[in-house]
Image (cartoon, one colour):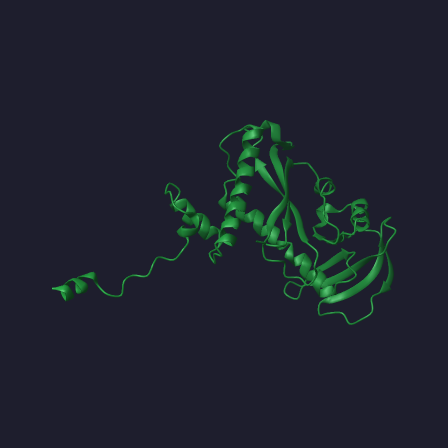
Length: 271
């Protein structure tokens, strides 16, 4: 069994990378110093575009930079990584390119670029620029796409090495990164990783790992039983039956059909 494939028309794997800060009270969790008066740890996740499941994950101190974490990832050749400007590291971009890995990210405003040539062909609606550039000290050309969101009017500058995809697909790939934001929001709201049962580092990390394990089990159950219910609905039903010894798959099956003929009528027919 496999999770449903991502919605884009390329064969490689799709990974959505991001991190979220879990705030902690410094006086209660002194080991988690983040800023002068604030404590925190950071949850790093690489979400698989097939089913939006966390394939890569790690917990670090709050100050640990996203690009440092990303450098140790073993992404397969031909895959696509989508991430925000927090991962900006030109040396890592070059490593990805040398490993046959594609990426899409946003370009910082102060980035030093050299414009080379415009790409041939008609640009899709909203795309004002699609051209080859040199970025920093990266020797191979990259691709710059400037896109204006029709709803907000906000302009986005994307940089990618995916020359084989059209500009519209590049913009849609970056929009897909919103799925990992939804993932972080869901686990924070539903899986108790904002308040903790213990105060030690081990207690906090264990509680977060348990929360991630619960998410994976819920996703597996949803896929295995082919449930149309949302993850939140599945979680709520499990909570209501927490102390019931029942088969999980059967728990989500619709109730059996009620008899169409009353047993009392059958009794009178025999008299």
